[in-house]
Image (cartoon, rainbow, N blue to C red; front, side, top):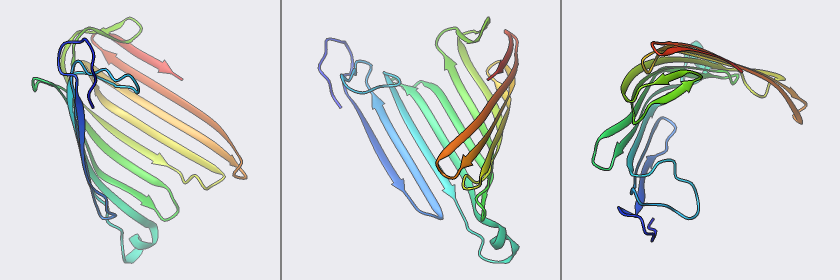
Length: 209
């Protein structure tokens, strides 16, 4: 991608992808480069002047015998990495996700447990909640996330997730619940709620949706 404008700097960008789609072993990778003067006239760019790299490795065995074969359709063991660098190579953001235990049952329910290691550099003070201002600077924090999803083909489906752990300079908990009634495949009635509680040196976060 290249554009002609009056901005100083690199006016080009590109993306490379290499994937290995497979049921048992799956690999996905993407590298992207966006110059600081790249300003496409059509479309949307999340950030300028960055390099990004994404890598996903997953091993997804299917039980073939015993009681596991009757209950579990497929396991998933996965690792993902998402990285953002400035054009000079300075790391701004990284997110490492490890899923040591996830599975989907023969009846369509799924369970997922993941550990997320975060690194983020705030270039300026950032307000994460009303009157809670995070100072600019680097932050490292780790989260644990558990989720359960009931099969959507049932008349009543349920989605639950809970994330707990570090959040920039403090810690937080994030609970999500969704209940959906599927009426004869033509109408869905849903109820969703989100509860966030956080405690940081700069203040507390309390959010209910």
